[in-house]
Length: 462
Image (cartoon, rainbow, N blue to C red; front, side):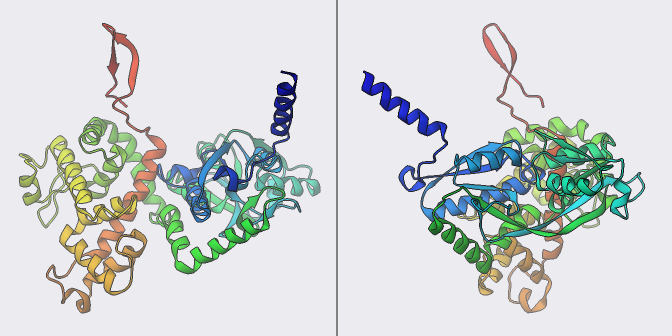
């Protein structure tokens, strides 16, 4: 018994020291990442945490092991736990740090820091204007370190560091004029501009910085070499560019006026139609917020919309499509939304099974605009150009070729509006990002509080 206690104490002591068992033995790569950021929100809609998560999972696949994520609140906690060797690698939109024990990977992105203010405030033209202003940052972030260094030479600069917040939360508070100035990454600001068009990029701080993975002390140099080789290979193959496009490629599509108008209509019109979109989600499994974004792109949520070509209603259905789906009145918003959602689901199901999400959804949306026949024709063209027909990133470049005679003259489907379809899909992605930030997911099988006659009640509300 005494020997057993000594053995137990030994292992507990080892755990207290935070010693990480090599992933070769556990067959598991332990990864530190930050809590949800705006970039992650953007792929519920998209963002940087989602981008980093997808990218570092490719490293686990390269090593032939599983990935396990530890999510922390901020960079200070992340670095503390990385130094304690609770994980092998940290992937959370991080720059290299001045610590010889923590090695960095090759850079896979570049990012600058920007001061952000509300458009109603006087613009900042120089750093001296920050005197006696509160500048808000995330605690433990590189932005806090930059400001604290500046504050050494300017004691009148007031730095307010927040824990348990993401950069997108700072931007939301600046947009609401609760905070006067925030310092965030430019990637986060690009996403935030779509969500909060009241924001303005006031001033860039410092040079562009590389974004890297960080490795725990005493990490095998061979692992770091394999990570770098993977990043170089992803860059050369175009896979890294495709992944960047998935999270960031659509964020600069709309003007400030477009975004402002959309948000105004979202608050004014969307509540009336929300139950109809949620019923369509129940029927098709497609997130109601994506369906609402599609409807806005089609009709600006006008149930009486009519185009010169004869498509009509909230989801702008052709007469043939409406007949096939049993729609008696295309101008009835409930019928239109239900049928439009089913049509999109049918298009997605008609695509080859090897196409993965979210590319599958983006391609189905393109087919919603130009027809499945034209999409199949564009996929054929992609094959002749050695482009990946299963990748939305590749097809964005191929679809506009449907309007060029040298391509469409060889196709049975004829000329197509492929460029228009690309614009439509990219706009829908932005609209969906915005709705996702303002509206919660709809989970029709969530149990509502309370029971009736001993039977749980199902909630069919937001």
